[in-house]
Image 1: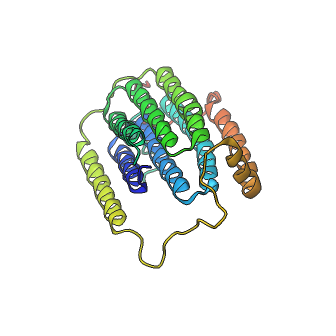
Image 2: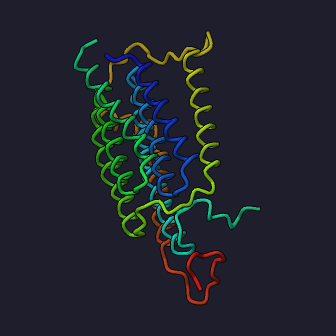
Length: 100
Length: 185
């Protein structure tokens, strides 16, 4: 059995890459993909802890996260399509209508 | 440690991290979406090494199947493959990268320090058996303990569907144009 800490390290690295994507990228589609990466890292951590603690409920939470991620992606992509129709760009910096 | 497990873990975690880096660095959005699929499938393999077989199958079907296809659809629908952004806000990306690295270093330090003494998470009770990750175990966990959450998730999906339909409808004629649209007269 691979020890738990290795999985925690991998999940941490994946999550940090997701944070980098959200903070440093300007294209909205890539930002959504980075959010998916972060959700994925959280799921990996949950599954690893489920094995460690013999808890099927942790795996059940992953199921719920999957469903919520699917809903989030659908709504986010609809917003992006709408944004592109209205503003003609995918750059997150151009969408500053509600900024002070 | 059994070596097949370790080999499998090493290959798939290296693949997942490489693919995740590719997702955030590629300039072509189609390539980014395809690398996202690679990252998600290799996380599915990691689930297999954690004996979560049902979740691994779901990961491939939902994430790598449905979600990546949705991303590809939108990228191709909008037809903006290449990054058109100018470099006038390069410093923002640098600040974002620095913030993310600080965050990552903080998490790593916390993980290295471990939990404070006396707060150990011991939730294994006598009579428990090791997980096999089958659909049966998951169904028991969901429907015996989280039946309400299950119903709420179906509501969330319904609300998301209604919201997407409402968002994706065309603007009614005569609606006000958003100022600052690129390329509009």
